Image (tube, rainbow, N blue to C red):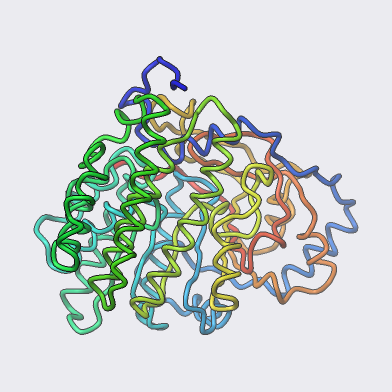
Amino acid sequence: MMVNRKRIGRRGLLATVPAITALAVLASAGCQPAAAPASDSKQSTVVSALEKDAKVLRSTEPGGTTTDLRALGTIIGNAKVVGLGEATHGSHEFFAMKERVFRYLVEEKGFSTFALEMSWSAGLTIDEFLQGGEGDARQIAAKTLAASPWEREEFAHLIGWMRDYNTSHPQQKVHFMGDDISAPKAGDLLFARVTDYMRKARPEALQQLNALYAGVRPLDDLYAYMNKPLAERRKNADKAQEALDLVTATKGTGDDYEWAVQHARNIAQTLAYAAVDVKDPASINTVEHMRDKAMADTVAWWQRRTGDKVLLSAHNGHVGYRSTDPKMTPTPQGTHLRRDLGRDYVSIGFTFARGSFLTKDASFDGDWKKVTVPPATKDMNEYTLDQVHHRDYFLDLRALPSEARAWLNTARPTYDAGTVYKKGTTLAIGKAYDVLIHLHQVREADKL
């Protein structure tokens, strides 16, 4: 079976993983049925209940006092992994808040890893820079985040802060980790980390390992690779799984073995994802299920292997327990992490009532551009949330009174934008997150 002979261009697949996700949205029926707008009296009751528990957020900008985040720290408690979402892939306030919360968690709660919904191999490059590698933060951001939603000044600033923190805290260094498949580039270094291990641990199997990787190594351009025939891509995915099995068969112990297995696992996951038939909704559904499970497994593996407390940054639909497209993504990364880590995982979602963000017109083509949405209408989640008498605030959704929980547990239209902005999505916020941060207004992120 052959993939569509119309080539997937480099420019058109500059955000392969989010783009296929967006295509998945278009391929599914998607949304939960929305509830009718609440009456004025019921809405007033809900707003009053929310106001009693709302904690004022002083700012989304990093730096300055963090006294307003102490209540958030109490809500997080002793969690080992905190998922911090974003309602769009391109709003300044969400990205800036990532750094502000991470800095607080590092300085006050002992966190030491920032994980991002991005390439595992690119995350390794960023972490090498943080540990003293050459270059500067903006160069590293441009190199590793190119064409992704996070190729923004806000993330360059975060990387710069992490590098500076490590310089001044050499005994308490922080780390950066990408928990996703290695797109758009796995790179030869990732393959070399696997083969170098095998050369030492089981040299007689090295030739077999090299043969299994021969058809894809170094995978420097996943976009070009996606134009190969589907049958070839599926065969290579099977070989990558064989390579992973070969590494695990060494039954080694210690860090060298654990890291080699993880690198081989990510290569196998990347090639399995790249074996998608973009014309077949069922194939897209399968790889999206695989992707969220793979991301969750990587985060859990990292936390257990390193002992680090982790802030996980991803879209709301990945850190939470519900997505705005439950048919295509019935089990988000957050659900897997809750099952795996229990109460050691806390999910924080974002909402906003109006503003701008960066998105694209089509899944596989075009540049990121500014989109502005009007104030939320009365039927939307954000309309009622914005009636609370705080501009920005956060809530522990688990501790709210019954009337507020009932309202939050009902699906309503909500603002949600990934690679492509699709109107009409719905979500029951109370079932999606443990904690909610609501912002009155957002603006588009700053291009790098």
